[in-house]
Image 1 (cartoon, rainbow, N blue to C red):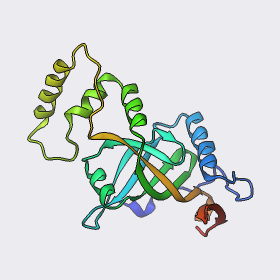
Image 2 (image 1 turned 60 degrees about the vertical axis):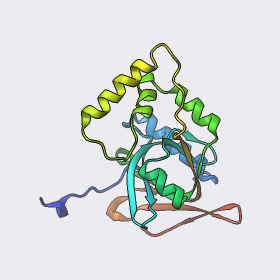
Image 3 (image 1 turned 45 degrees about the vertical axis):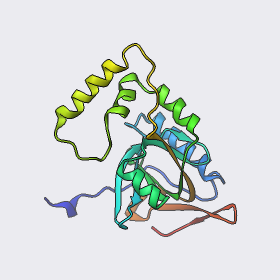
Image 4 (image 1 turned 90 degrees about the vertical axis):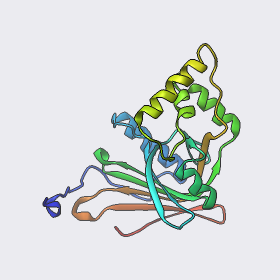
Length: 210
């Protein structure tokens, strides 16, 4: 594999700090809408990085579901990421929209969302996904695929004709940002990088070198 020869010369846009929205959450919404309008596959897919009790980092793709004070996603609280966040409630998320030559990096502290929001979102999920939340003890060792399928069938029968309640071990987290960076690819690797940093309750906006 000649990986050194793989390269793109980005030239689809520019990012100027004087023209972006003064609030990074609003700027994110602008870019996210543009990603949706470009019909990118799963524009809400984001790379979540956490730090374990053993101080080892880990990452995975999760799906953004709400943007309010911060960025919310849902999972099993007993999963590896749930355990990480219980010990170190700091995380980072990264969006990469390659077709638009854009990236957004976000860092902040993480809190569990309100229980009502978790319940409301759970009830909006497809019924099969609701059952799946009960089936999977996420991140635990299991003997085989059949183990999951048998549990699914048993729970499908148990909940037949009934509303499915949200499991106590399942719900949402919200990452409240203190740092956001918007990256736009540019020719010759001279990319545009505009940073928002929360200082004394106010967003400071500046450019950093590529």
